[in-house]
Length: 341
Ligand code: PLP
Ligand code: COI
Image 1 (spheres, rainbow, N blue to C red):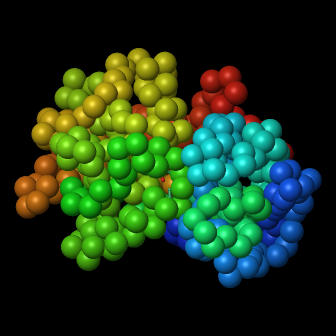
Image 2 (tube, rainbow, N blue to C red; image 1 turned 135 degrees about the vertical axis):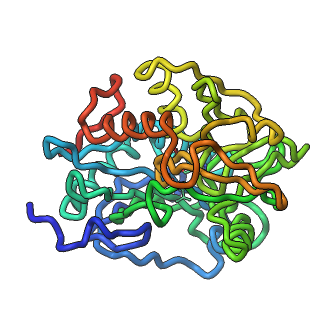
Image 3 (tube, rainbow, N blue to C red; image 1 turned 90 degrees about the vertical axis):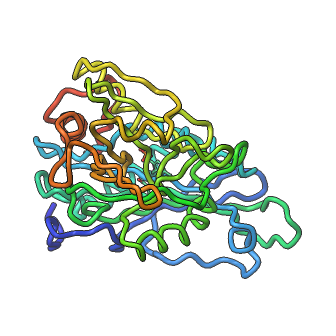
């Protein structure tokens, strides 16, 4: 199979349509058999539940070309499961987990020419999503839904790739206690748009959100969880019911402990103690691990000793081990790698 003529090494994180996407419709209480289509456009009624009351959820995952030339995805079963959790919270029907994984495989295989080559630094980003598609005018869940999966080749989420970024402590909240912060719903991202635009206007790359109840604890950013490294090399991640349970973060904790022999801790992290950490990173499918060099808290600079030039040493080890597993250079734990072709 010939790869598309794309400048893989210079891709940013943007949308490039690929040839095929998957679609399945839910009507009268059941999902249809689903199919691949070439049509990238979605046509829905003006009063569709998604347009009026934002009834939409999504996932984000990647396909990689391994060193030996296979195409794989990383822990797709966990994305399938998280999407079921998101669906339940928004009163949407679950898309069966086995069918989710099957749909992802079909999309990746059909777009194999768009999966960036090994070593290019790019990957194929996969976006499964689901939305209420029939007219809804009173505030209630839709009766009909569409589940779709599309893919697009991407480069680094933050310009500059592995270069440390600067973030600010945000005055807006992302998620309320007992709200929807723990699921992957479009509404969580809509309400973060003003915060990210104002962060960018002030020269910051991202926002550090605090817990809405006390505004003393670190939550996450608009699109990634935090990992911190203490001065004695312990890996610490914030524990909260109102952050997205990142698959990357869960995988990194395992890697830190089992592959690198580091102590790990998932616990509440107070803003006051951030200054004491040696390294900080943002982790997620899109972000991979993006190092943070500086957090600005209302004019007070919190600088990590890892600095603004490169990733800290533990962050780098975590990054190399995780991406090594994803690209097939390092043996993966049982069930982490799903080979597509
Ligand atoms: N937190 C938020 C708000 C996200 O949007 C994402 C991206 O999916 C993550 C964390 C990281 O999650 P994952 O590692 O499963 O991609
Ligand atoms: C992902 O990492 O897959 C996400 O969904 C984050 C998004 C901000 C691009």
